[in-house]
Length: 321
Image 1 (cartoon, rainbow, N blue to C red):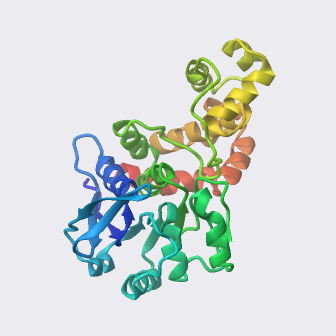
Image 2 (image 1 turned 90 degrees about the horizontal axis):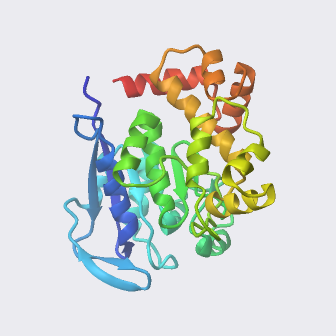
């Protein structure tokens, strides 16, 4: 059965950051099931001759194939980052976003695009994030917004915000995962050669330059052995380093500890099994390394904010269509 077409409108305002804009186009175009077209249609909407920027420089002009008014027809609106977040925003843009929110349209921002959402009043009383370098200014300018500068993205349901640059990739993959399940999101991630899953609450400050060597073989081994009890000491022996060194290098690489990363990997494995099999929840818990359905439910509540059964009902149905 064909997946229903979902229109993603990209608000290309003047001074839009080129990488953020291209991120939306790339991820949703890559989200296509085997042998099928993508269930998304991306429409870049903007004023004629809008400038596209990189860090501190105007790079080229954009000819958007759709006018800004076409955002009204989108199922999801993405607002990429802008180079100058101190500028006043065109009233027509803010009005379009406000009206779209009132209709129930899903709206998300990448990087400093959060300033546009805040100016439209869409973040009032809500938790939000943006690039760490702009977070202080966002909090000062819009004190009614609860700014969290330490996370990759924040999902408030209808309105989502993400941190700088590469966190936009995480946000877009998260939206694909919400719409069609983790299998399609993982396929899109493979096509654009990036990790399939980084939790929204993961720290923005992530260093991919390890002091020496790489933990990739150890992480692959952990994924292959999620069903087993994996004490920290055994993981350290596998990595041929002390527990202290393992913890330090793991945090440098992933922004979290080995055991916290292991829990996330097990939750992700459970999500895949719930989406792709009819295994009982108890069996899913065993195969993903949680040992019991009660433990699986507890970690699902903490990380996914739902139950395994509810998750299966929502996401299995979507990915099966």
